[in-house]
Image (cartoon, rainbow, N blue to C red):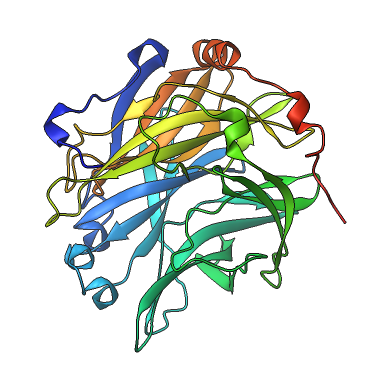
Length: 338
């Protein structure tokens, strides 16, 4: 299915307190001249940090030129008002024919990890793998990269594995449709299945029969739930460009059963009016829950970084309206830990 970006809406305004640009392309120095976007978010010593993907030029968007440039991970310290205070470019091992990008962040067992993708170039074809690395803030580096291995035949492009720490285990929401939850060995990259469920049990108001993909690492919503965003993506009707249309949905996961219990049926955010390189791309990369606000940090048009501030109470009411809870068919689908 294609789309016309001139006819796309932007957001579910009844749930939103505000929306604003936080970081412009070029604001983080020459490495960000062509973009500073897709921000991961994390609290470190009480301060909000965003890890942005920076691009020095637009060459990576040209077909066949992906490996001609490198993405730069830039860690930004934000004020309580989300204004940029300072930033630092992180180092990582650069290997020819490998291009890591789109770093997400999480705390696990006293360490800060980043789950990200790595594009790999071979003599016959290119492919993408999911990876896990550690973040050392003091030494300003990303290190100990491990390629993740699913417990089944891998796809050509493995990306958007979203992760969270749960009772001492590192878990990965591999996919929503079907619902596959994995446990990850952070040292070796081996994964095993914890929950496998046919998504037909909790189908929701998708815009078509197209697939649903992960957007954000799940974070704690309240005492009983994790919250995450998921999305549908549609390619442009113009096959010569890289524009895509993203529709972002919200989902709650029960913290005891690890099963989905609510998906808001209408898109919370829809691309189509973004500034930057690709107008259809509003990519929610990370979430942060405050007392009465859910911050949804996003990449705007594959170019800038912004935030949508959701009213937590209003969004909670929307989740309650679309709550499907623990259906009888879920009874045999409890998480399995060995």
